[in-house]
Image (cartoon, rainbow, N blue to C red):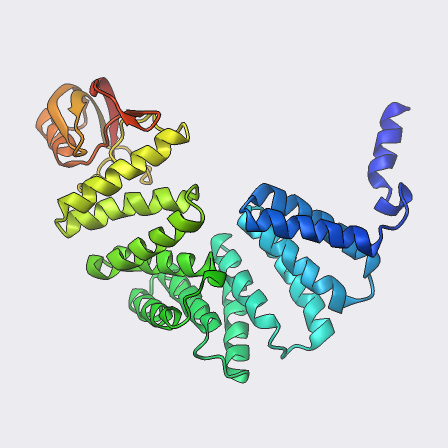
Length: 355
């Protein structure tokens, strides 16, 4: 009997348990959303945005002009909190706002650009392309070709072309995106401006143009450190800049980013690996799945992110000398505790896979 009651409770609509919520309750929830969003509390923002959308669905069931913007708010909060529901919610918001404003409304442009980014992130290429082309159409229709929305659309195309292995087109569109974005930098564009610069750095690095990738990464990092230093993109940029600095032979910047990456991880309780932050040979990169060999080594980690006193204890599928060279040329950050460099940097037995 108890099980039946629980099932019925889950099946009953919200209004069956309470009176229809008021507009003032919605306003209060949206205010809480705005406050948590301003403080970059992504989990709270998501909860308040979802609650606001659930309330709005009851208040504005037949008013797409009222429900659409709140559906969009929920989509944004979900995307920032990395919730998969975001993509579906963008589609719902688009449908509502098309009903309210027409299919050619300028109000659809920001939603389409956000939806395209989310579709790329969720590996939905067909949806990403549809959102992007629709955004481009409206950008041209409303004379927004020099806007920040145009910059974001160009970067969306760049990412899609790269994923389709059309690298030259990707590089061209990424360059256009960066030029357009430079004309429209403003605090209100966070986090989209930082993301655009990050992806420009990514595409340039993948293409081997390290001179172009370096300033984009650095600018994105400066924005993130100012606004959201706990973002995982901060760690990603530090790690990517180790590779960029290696190719540009800039040891000072390389060491800085290597150390900062390890500090970021250590403060957040993630610093327990002795894996290279960057291996120029690529043989220890874990993204590759076919393992060629393994080795065990002892070594001392240095403050310059280099391994010293390397002794290969055991190797399989690779010679001792090959294993030694991998560690000698890789960049392995030193150990920290509570953000402080430890005096003992010895790794007794480091286990490495080779791909």
